Image (tube, rainbow, N blue to C red; front, side):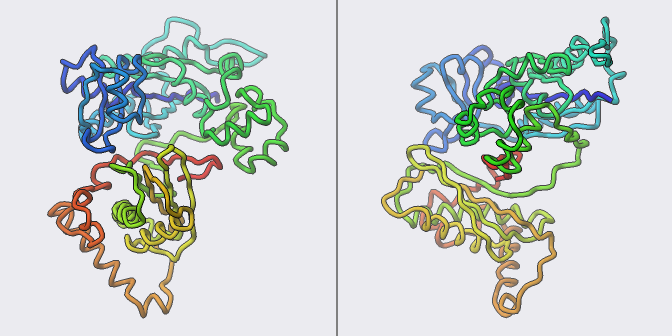
Length: 436
């Protein structure tokens, strides 16, 4: 049976919620930013009016003000964003229980088995093509419009919707008409709609992969779809086969049911530093701050211990670097931070200027690992109990109530609760298609 898969993307979500909270912001250029006094004060979201001045997500506050002198900067209210995200999903749940989140403001919906729930469509539901019966583009657009209108009328938020027969094309479609539009990529039109688009528009095609494909002559999605399998797989490995599947519209990945969250393959956090880090001690301190968050989040799960530590670095020229190493299974902040610091020292020697850092762990044992004799004779178990006790103290008395000596060295970091102040986004993918 032909599937009907939607991808919904709430437009300028943070900024739109801020306008609901403060109607005086309507029609004005708005940017939701972090602390303006620190370089963590980057643009997290912006209104359409701000976009017209060239304001982009990731701009610093001063860059946003330079582009748009009249921009109104507001601090984020993450609890409100979470609340509205739940309200939107409650609307989706009227039409299907197959709702898969892709971050706080995006979802996939599979409505194939629930089309009778939608209001009556005054037109042809099906058309014949190539001897086969397919849903008409008009009917598919009707379904997308119903979702958009429901969210707009009830919550005052706009959403862009892509409607297709698989998740990848639906995701691509939601980007085609922004803001507040419905795009249909069907069996009848998909080649005309997307084969001429740049290959970078395909999900999971990052900068490095785009460059490699373009150098090989595959500059559009259509050219990639028509590519020789062996050539692509030789250049990109198994990830190449995945991209070919995506480009050709052959993805059959199901939309997960509401609450059936994807199993985590990695846990990580990153931060933009208030100033460029040029000293090993400052780098190490920041890695400890990040590792506190990562280790605490890991201990809250049932994933057990991790055996791989990943380090991500962005320098002052905005170049990004990623390295990783296998380690003994751990959920300890100290061990994660020290491994990350070792990776940093292997990659960077002074002079360096570091703008942002990230720490991630993966390779979870789900409680199946056994401690070695050396670990049993050592203090691993005692250190884990101590860190779990610290978790409980912080829950009751706040993040700054207990701190490591290395963090106390910089008072500005004592209240830098990465875990408590950052929303968890879905897993990103690197240019090899791996979760990071």
